[in-house]
Each structure stands twice: as structure tokens, then as C-alpha cells.
Length: 134
Image 1 (cartoon, rainbow, N blue to C red):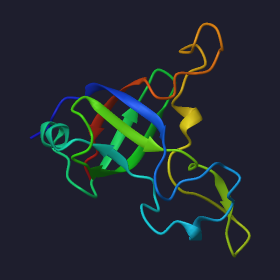
Image 2: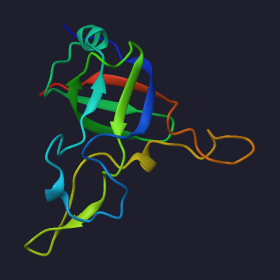
Image 3: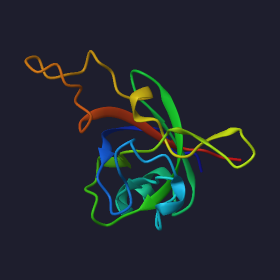
Image 4: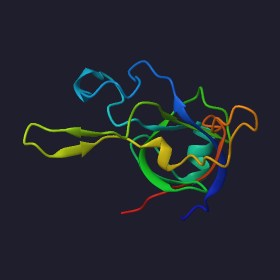
């Protein structure tokens, strides 16, 4: 059964045990969550027809990305989170580059920001989430 996309509050830049600022240029130090999963609540996962390891599409007013899903009972229904520090183009052993995770700046909009400081509201990004099917 196909489930319609819903609007969520996306925390674009959640701090996690194995995330870091973009100063890190080597993915091998991350021991968990190497791809930077999209975390959603069990309730929302069920409503969207998603399970751990499934792929989802995230769409905001600025862009679209895809991520692996992690169902997490610490997430409140209606909220989702992607980790900070991913989505970088990193060099590989053969001289090419590889991107792991979602580049959050492709999803956040400078127009959706604090009116005084001008800082984008990374922790409150309206986003649609839907399951990707093969």
C-alpha cells in the first residue's frame, strides 16, 4: 500500500555520538550510523510504511534528498532528524570522491531564518517524507 507524504519538522543537523563538524575529512572514524540515517518515530514509520533500513525521500522548500531510515522511539511523532557533518565530497583511495549522507545545506533555506541573527532555522525545517520503492 502506498502512503501519502506528510509534513514533518526536520531537525537538520542533529548531534549524534559519531557526528562532527565538517572539519573531519575521513569517514572511517564513525563507528555507528555511517550513512547518517533519517530518524523517525515508530508511529510515523508505521504511517509511512517505513522500516529500519528502508530508503526515504525528504523534500523541503529548497531541495530533495534520500536517506536510510532508522526507526527511533526517542523521536516524537511529526518530527524527524538528520545528523550534522555529513554530505561532504570526500576523497577515496582511487582519487575519486564519494559523498556519504545528506548535505543539509541543500535542504535548508536561507529565507527561513531568525529575523535578527539571520541564522537559518536548521532545527525546524518543514519537510515532506515519503517511502522510496524499488
